[in-house]
Each structure stands twice: as structure tokens, then as C-alpha cells.
Length: 80
Ligand code: FES
Image (tube, rainbow, N blue to C red; front, top):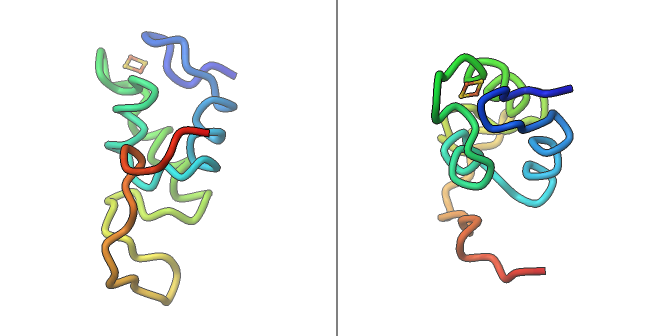
């Protein structure tokens, strides 16, 4: 299913990016271009992050555990 009509991004693309380590809405925007045009897909993409257990605000709060170490950002990871 297409999540972002403006950038032709599907739910599979979003879930794949999350599986690859995208940890915030902003990372998904950078990697996939979602919510950069009309913005109508933003709430859906944020919901997908929450479903995946990633805090949509990017505060790194996941469940009861709060991570204090600085995360490795997607642009610091090595390419596969
Ligand atoms: S639907 Fe995603 S930016 Fe328009």
C-alpha cells in the first residue's frame, strides 16, 4: 500500500527502512522523502514508527527502558 503518494513510498519501504535501523521520523524523511511535500502521510508514518516500537518523537524512549547512550545514526552506519 502506498503511504506517501507524493513520493510513491509504500508501507514496505517504510517498514524496510525501520528494519534497517531508521529510528526517527526525521530519518525516514531523509531516507525516503516521506512527508516532505503535502505532509498528509506524516501521521501514518509516525504511527508505523510507533507500531514498530520506535518512539515517534525520536527521544529514544522504547517501552520502559530509556536509552542514555548516543545512538548510531543511519548516516553513520556502514552501507550493506
Ligand atoms: S503524501 Fe506524503 S508528502 Fe504528500
